[in-house]
Image 1 (cartoon, each protein chain N blue to C red):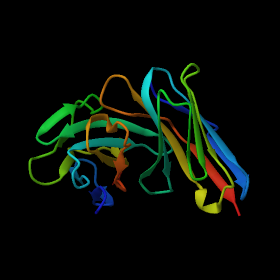
Image 2: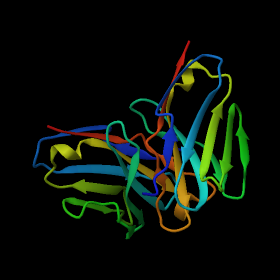
Image 3: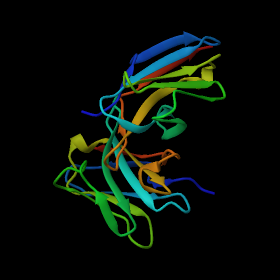
Image 4: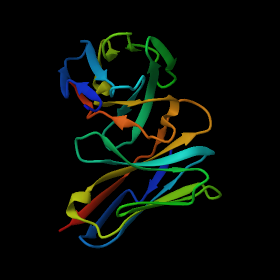
Length: 111
Length: 116
């Protein structure tokens, strides 16, 4: 399967702490994206990192990509209760028309 | 500038009935993707369409499922003779070009299908 795998499956932290989620994948990619999904809602695109990029920032989000290890990490700094959601990575392989989603990390930020 | 609109938000069908899910892409987007999310799982690709064309249906079950994106109107995902295993959230995404290169997908809020 080309599907990404997030780690950990679930993460619970105190408000103000940093949250780190990891994603591993199996094939070469054009880019990798991170999405957030609040319970019962659709997915919100957070950030896209291309295969020739190693790090990208957007507000409190920091994404890294290591194509040699086929892995990516999402860091949320100074977490807030509103960050509570599931986070998915999605890989865009070199071939095909679809993105491959992982099973997600469920993040709970405790106020 | 409305986002991707999906309706209905919730749909309950009895076994054997037909389910029809609608998706209107973002304005200016001509590429539509359907994904299915089973409880506690990630999204699984079903089908990719452009106007009047099915480009990739490799993720669609061979029977009972069909999709279309007509010249006018929304994209439709149709599930005939639904079974309990079809219960899931069905998400539609759109992009201005193939593969959403550099943009990412814009997702709708999904249709939650429950088969009773």
